[in-house]
Image (cartoon, rainbow, N blue to C red; front, side, top):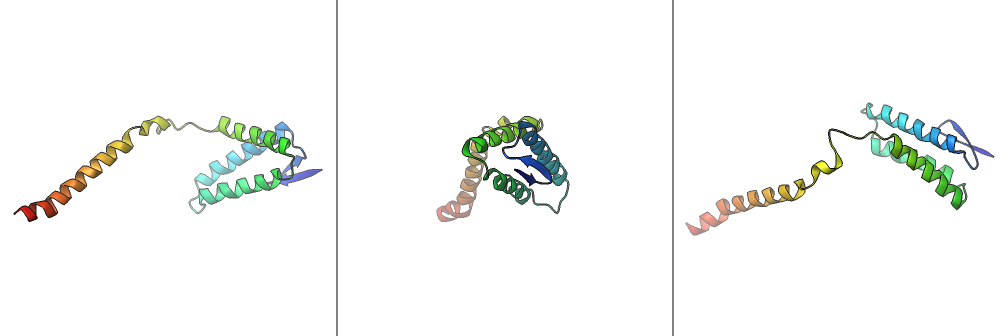
Length: 119
């Protein structure tokens, strides 16, 4: 028995090489889609995951777990780290921005209402 996802033929259950090939193909399509402004990446990725889900639903629970473990693991392995925007770069920015925003709001309220009421 076999199935086709995005033009790639898969055995049931799929081999590890087939799953890895699918992950690389999806990564390639995503890289190409990034440069097309007419493609909404969220919808594009959801459609891609839906096709994978429709295939995986045919598998037994053990086969499905193995499939997703290999597929997601390969996608994470080949993902690019964003050196310009590391994940820890935004630590603390949220609290600082909230403090500055509250200070600006307090100043606006003071000059708009409190000063006029006191005068």
